[in-house]
Length: 296
Length: 270
Image (tube, rainbow over all chains, first blue to last red; front, side, top):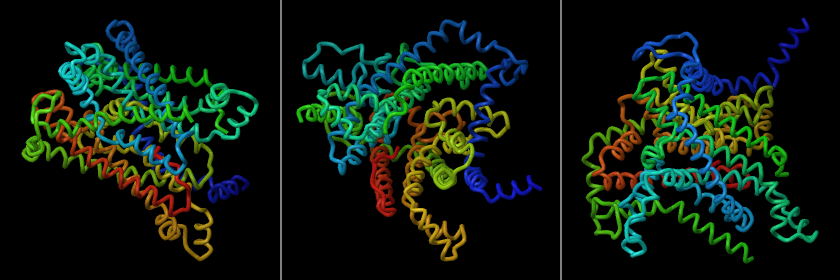
């Protein structure tokens, strides 16, 4: 009786209505995101016996292969290093831009500046990557322009088909992702706190270090995660402009699935890269935990 | 204000860096040379004319348009449910559920692609345009929800209550009062998800099978056919103009939506 009454109450409650409302979207995410993610973890413990035949006895074989094979290990390590370099470059160069828009642009013009920054992001990613290939190439735009102007005598080699080119291109691709979260965090800062800092005799730089920066941490952390995590899964940029030294783990995953036809090993590599990225991200968030509540 | 001026100069240089590729694109698309290098040779529209004669390209465009339109409709429709639930109701487990739906925002696309590939092959569904649409909806949902959230959260709850007081049912109140108010958000969500799907390569390349979409076609041209570079740049110019046009429309509707619900513009899509 009491439970029936409780059920009746729940049926008319906000909770149920909320769940009903979110259910189509939640079911979709369950079917086409949650189930596939579980499936790929499961597949990573299976071994491939033929082109389309599998041995379903659970095994660590794929993981062991991924760690023992020096080529795979090197690729995972290199991907992490490239992603970290991209993240550092993107966030450090983006911060002053976000700071400028938040603190030095009149409020009515802010959305125009943000719009200007987001436009390049919405143009074809493939085209942008390809253009960097054309710009940085051995006979490309930069080299031909510098030769033509007489700045250099022979084309620069270190700007094309290597990890540098990959880092630069990815930093360009993820710029708005870094600027927007930092901007949002800076906007939340109560401007009177900054005045208080200076009234108490601090220089502008001291106030920046002691007030602005700690309060901007949530935005910086968001920016770091939103750049770092997807970067490791990119294979278009390494494929088009990375050359031999710029290939990343996603290129290997892709070829395991589509060319080598070893989906279980590909799954294990995918799981390893997800876990690596998640672990690095968690450590980073943990290190910044003190300032994560800022912004008010 | 000396410090402000330094920052302004820096920001302008940063913008130049952001726009450099897009500015160079038309420059070389109209340049009368197969080699992409300075100095420029002369003006030509040959590369654009060449686009008219490529039938595989036209088919790829058509397929991409079908995928993008379907994705935009489904992602926006599903996004409306999530945004409505997220802004109107408080319920247990709301954070985790919505957080999970937003996960693709930080999940590498290749993970979404391979995991869907595994499941679709396992259940025997096979690859093709439907598979690509399923994947695109997954990655477009977070963007749709982010846009729709801001549309729904700027709604004045009392408007809806007034509709109930005047005898409307929940459904008719939604149709007559809420839908018109969030319509600009819906339109901008449709445009943004359309743009994302149209441009998406990684998931499409895994899931479309033999059906070549526009980005898959582009990628193949970029990797295999090095003689066709100016044609690729001409195609890129057309695509960039098209997406800037779409974005302008999306931004117009987003601002109109904020103005309509009486909110204040906080800028940006994200």
